[in-house]
Amino acid sequence: MSGATNISQYSRYNAKVARSRATSEPAWIRWALIGVSLAFLTLFLFVPLAAVFTEAFRKGYEVYLNALIEPDALSAIKLTLIAAGIALPLNLVFGVSAAWAIAKFEFRGKSVLITLIDLPFAVSPVIAGLIYVLIFGLQGWFGEWMSEHDFKVIFAIPGIVLATIFVTFPFIARELIPLMQAQGKDEEEAGLVLGASGWQVFWKVTLPNIKWGLLYGIILTNARAMGEFGAVSVVSGHIRGLTNTMPLHVEILYNEYNYAAAFAVASLLALLALVTLALKSFIEWQTARQASDNEKRTEE
Image 1 (cartoon, rainbow, N blue to C red):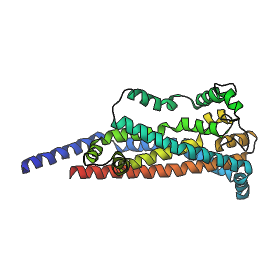
Image 2 (tube, rainbow, N blue to C red):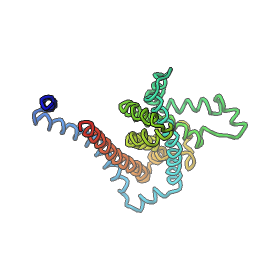
Image 3 (cartoon, rainbow, N blue to C red):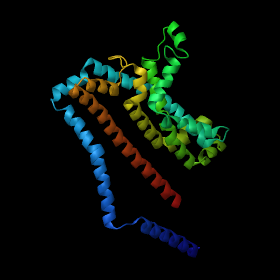
């Protein structure tokens, strides 16, 4: 018995040594790669962020605050929050349902469903906006009927919400599918054998196992919803104070040469992006920590 244990420990040691040799490089290569990465980040991330905040505060805090509390800016912020607030829970339900079905069940059309989930990644957001115009616009398939019933989708909040949902619905599903596939079905099947209902299995077994991946998908979805420009631009009509989201409001201000106000609203979007990045890093750390704990328990 002790001989087998010694052989197992020796095999693990050899595996660690092999991994160490495979991933070790000369110091100059490591520093060169780090330098290239930092230079790229400085040029394409740190400098643009610094420029946004510098331009936003160039004329002082009073001008900055006035740009954010101006009625059209408040309307753009409100509309952005509304669109994200509606799209996020709907994408949450869809993402969890689709991931659960794909990871836990076998059915016809499974590959087709996976392909359709990836569709927004392949289709330009502008094309997505045009699709909704062709369907719900005044000259579209349902345009005449909606006009008769005084119901507007295009150039109104419903169209903005639909466009936001389209461009964001893959994120939660795509984050959960590989995670749930890697976890397998053993724990859920054990719960069912012990007499738990489907909902009990979901709340007590599935959800705790996917919570960090789910939060990661929610953060990515919310970030994309608040920052979406192309699809929303097509369906919004750019009606100032009514159908402009924050990115559209920034574009209008910039085109009017109102740079201080444009960069002030842009800085708010940048701040949301930084908060999203911090939350993303925290969740990645928690996910890695959970995976490490699971690996330790497996070895024990």
